[in-house]
Image (cartoon, rainbow, N blue to C red; front, side, top):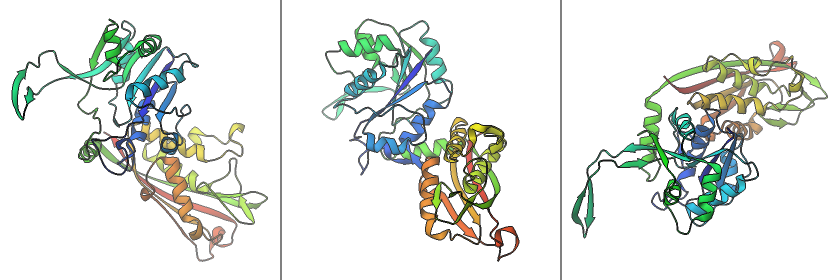
Length: 378
């Protein structure tokens, strides 16, 4: 099946309050929306990720992740979904997942269960049974007790055969609270699959620390180190930590020879026990000739996400006599943070010399040592 995923991020989050909408609020060092996008992509089922909302806000958050151009949202959630569905018609997906950008954690197994349900139903949603006693209130007092038997709390992503949900949206005459309601109104059966109490929708400010605690409580720390060296040669640009640094020589290597990113990738792969940068990008392959090393670091960040982990911090130490790193350190930190999809406060870049000793002291090359700390599910 060709699977598309709508990632809804057009809401203003009035109940959340604060200076920014909840989907852009920081959670464990990254915006909530970034977590949601990585959760959708982690299992590899999704062919196209279609963000919906304000492009200027969404594009930087999703930098480095594969996605279609952002589609502007509408005045309501339903209008935003309709806009995203219409944009997907050119790709003709078999099925579509519709997910709230404010749900940052998607437990493994939910998407496969939804797709399996679509084999026999036009729609499927994850849901959890209502456990609390329900009361209907009026005038500040209890008006009635509502039986909870057979009641469920709906979650996202909600999954649909694409033609069915597109037709339902095009035929809708009134606003619905979720997409499954449109299929219900059309008389089409929507399957229930087991949801999760951990599939929390960020609604109020207190949800953020609760979510972060839940995410990290089930994780173990992993530490990795990386080291790389490249020779300085004339006639090549000097690229360090994703930034072109003015210098009369550049680093020699199969790719752009960015010694900072190479060492950082090795630290990440090492922390995950997945080998080193050569495992994924062997220098024997010509397609990596003069390649921008930024794509290597995006891949390393994707491996963290695929394992359901998070980067706690990264520390990069460049070793050289020249050029001076200090004037460029802030730009390097910003670039690495962008590629890794984390807050800049989690990235450190500094430099040292070898007191003119050895090959770095003689200006023959540049070395880099890195260390990273990750949290990865046990």
